[in-house]
Amino acid sequence: MYIKRYTIATIIFVILLGWYVYAFITQDSFAIDFFGIPLPSLSIALWVVIPVVLLYIASVLHISFYSLMGSFKLRKYEKDYEKLLESIIDAYLGKNNRNHMFKTPRYKLLGSLIDNSKLFLNQTFEPNTSNEKLNGVIKLIEDIKKGEVVDLKKYSLEAENTLVMQNNRNRYKKGEISAEDILSNATKYARSLCEEVYADFVKTSPLYAIEKYKESLTKESLFSILSRVNASENTLEVSNEALISLFNCVELDTKDYVKISIALSKQMIPEQRIKLFEMLSEDKEEVTDAYLFTLFDLEMLAPADEILENSQPEEYLKFKAYRALKECNKHFNINLFI
Image (tube, rainbow, N blue to C red):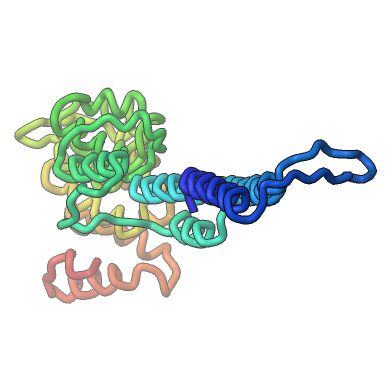
């Protein structure tokens, strides 16, 4: 019940009640004692009206109290609704360590679920909600997906955040930042982005620049570098020591070293190639397979025989099989034995 309407109705009722008693019942006056205190003599019509007025005042106080309590409760729901929207926005933005505090049980349940979930926008979803902030975030995400560059500073996202990475990738592709800008400030960017940019960077950069940012080296970028060694285009002249330094930046296994030998077989001078794997095999046992492959590939049989003769019976069985076939004048491609 609205207090204003209730007040108007009460006033009308009080006036009518007082008028009816005074006009049709009695016009006499009456005095009473209140706890021994004599009260002034008043018309009986007023004495009838006074309890109604007191009841009105008490009911208004009662209604106001519960209305105030209800407004406080409603405000909790309104604040929790705003926090729920923030939780949804943070989930869309891919923020980590989300922990929004809710005061109402129902929103607490929904908020807890959202804070511990990942939300992704449907490709057909349009940013036409009733909340402008939510609409702005949805449009921002869609713009990033389309390859646009947006301002993400106000959202305080981490460098490893997917949206930040894609936005920086968009900036890189649009030429707003160069590969060297990213690589020289690697701590500000996600490692995966630095590695991706470095893979492009090594395709045309000089050796000193490649070595400068080699902390972003990956197997993919390493093989891009190897493809440039003594190549006809974007030629890269590199010493064995420099190559070994690059190899040490990446975790390589036996198969990787064999692949490196195959990659270098196209342009590297045979003597340098042999020396490279000889140097590597002296420090790393897992390089011996690649060294043997290199020797057999270049028909350097004597050094290969020496290694096999000094090995254990169960070691390098494929290369021993290749050597045995070769001794029987059976010629096979060495690539079949790796």
